[in-house]
Image (cartoon, rainbow, N blue to C red):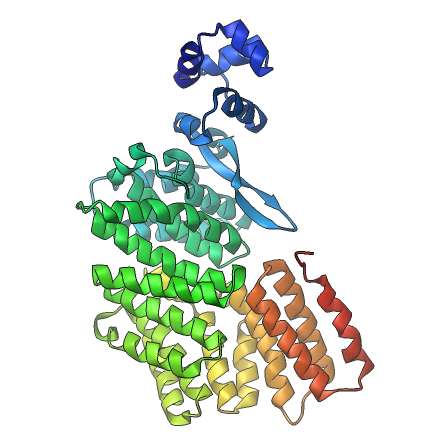
Length: 462
């Protein structure tokens, strides 16, 4: 690693002097400088501390950043270890293929084709290999690769990064694709903190006013759209709303109709959870104006939410009409269509809004059935929505004149378990409201009272 030798020479140290002061063996330091061996994570920390450098300064030699995970506190992306990417990739050509896609798009200023290729490669791997751990690791590598390779940070952006937009942007586009898929599982906190590293570089590239400003702004709009979703679970609804407005702002800058529609749909989703139904409807009506030229999956996303919001406002016929439109849009999608991931083009995501629509028009049995569809293993849906459906099954049961207490308790306990696994603040609020509903329905029932102790399993900051 020539950079280590250069740093040592700059300090005027011999190999022996540097090894002693650093606290490593002479042989190890010699081998690192010659590129015969690579320092492990602990040694990388020693090197960085001794030479007063950032980890990304040596990441170009085959290293990629990854993160520590604390099972209690979630992902802390600022705690960076460096892992030899060669050791991660050498056993699986699929990993190499994913990374190489970014390098193959250095001479383009539109990254939708690249993102489709990444999504197709991931889908092909998923169909061929049932090892979810390997796929998850591939997604994590893909998401974190631009951070380790180009030194993306929330701090002042290195000038070397801004001078190479043709290299940086394709890998951020690939990483965003990975973040969308990570967000659908239990890694959404990793996706959230990864976006924190992407956005400062992207906005700086927008401000440079070059041929890369527009593609960078498109990626900013997409990143803020995802942050709008994730902030509901990580940071709260107020911050989620602010991200939704930023997503809308950047989508309008580039006049990207799919993103103009979807950014508004995600903002309306925040208003829905805030119980600001009139505001949600207003934003969705605005999103609807972009639908004539939008992708069918984007149309479906807006229409399904319009159905749920209209139903919550008591507009039954309009709600059922929008729900019918949403399913028509969904069924125009080809089975292997490359829908934009930000449209959430999954059957389960339509089903949950069908459940909300039927719940609000008081078709409770069918609402319960719609929510329960998300629990089937063959239904593609995010883990966030799967937990949400479980909790909403409790709410639908509570309004039924033939409500079943034992079934309510079972679904509530499973919903709480999934919520704790997700560490989602939004889902926990829903779990708590469902518990209040059960206390109201069965005020003197010992089994219900005893459930309160289970709420203590939710981690707090105390």
